[in-house]
Image (cartoon, rainbow, N blue to C red; front, side, top):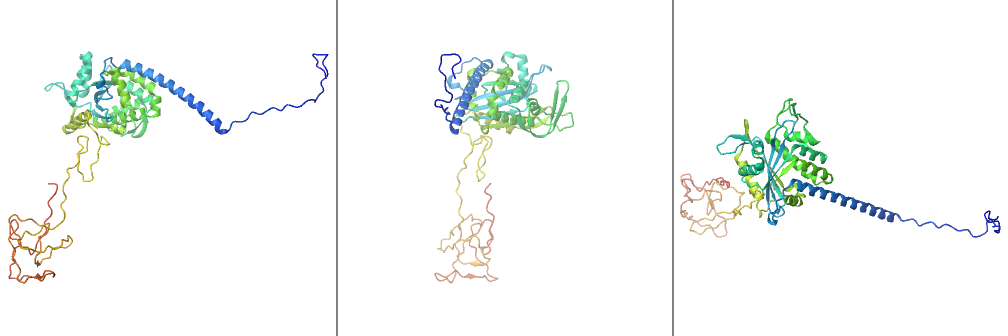
Length: 471
């Protein structure tokens, strides 16, 4: 066979020449494939996380600058080192109704040394007065009043007013609109809450439609807002109270904190920041917001003490219990003490085994050590030397007279000096047990001890109950 393209070429014989074998590429072992694949995935994950973190940082920075003030905070006043107090309010400012209500009122104190907080909920219907002898109003009246009359100083005056009530000088104040609250819950994917009762209420004027059933369930943003706002009913369900609403608010706040620390919460940070930025007002400086987030983003819910003030309904107000108010004030101020060291659980510290201890100030109080008296027989104060037999509490005293018998430990002590007892005529031999003699009917035994009130013979001692140690 010759080359067709070259007629002068010599023919090529078929099948002549060595055959060339193709080499197969060596296969990677399974462990190597897994290692390389894992490395690629981890690298992509790190790149994705880095990009997302950079995006969140940029968004957070923009939000904080938008919400916070430009005030410069000295290092010594930073939330990282100084305990702070903040007045929080949930505000209902719906455009369709043109109303402004502060239905959620909370006083918060934070301690950076212990990374802990105290949150006190104040019922919105509490009777309060702007002046000592002034007109009474509900607690939710004052912030809207200051906002409408003096908008430039509304937060300052509100902090001063409620600071006077709680006896706390509030450093800052923050309000969040209910629309922003609903958006935050939706961004978290809802909250799992324990609905304590059936709730049904309809108001066509402002569009309110509350319809919840009792039980543990996951609620979206609107349902969660209905859950914390429900009080009255017009559809044959039981009505709630302002106190119960405060307890629900604390349950919701606790769940939000837990969800924010979860993986889903972290992934939802972007949307949450948008919701907060569009619906929050505060006088907290931007640099202080940075420090608050850095310090308390990982706070343990066990280190948050929730206190809900209660009282009696005296229409149209709630009259608080003074003792509870004083305890709440003490708890708030205690958290502001830089040197305070809390118990393991701020909201409850169990008593010790003896039941001694006070938790009124959040700290466990060590009981004062006391000596426990031993069960022993008080020796006779008779000047005559007598033999003291061993005491056995299980043996009851005999009705007969025993020579050298001691006064039982649980009898009443004499007030005066005891008279010496008459010695028996026949002294028993040493080493022998004392001889018991029965008095003759006409013989009156001599008294060994004359107790208060007198007249009781030692021949028939009766034990008296031990004095009450609690008195």
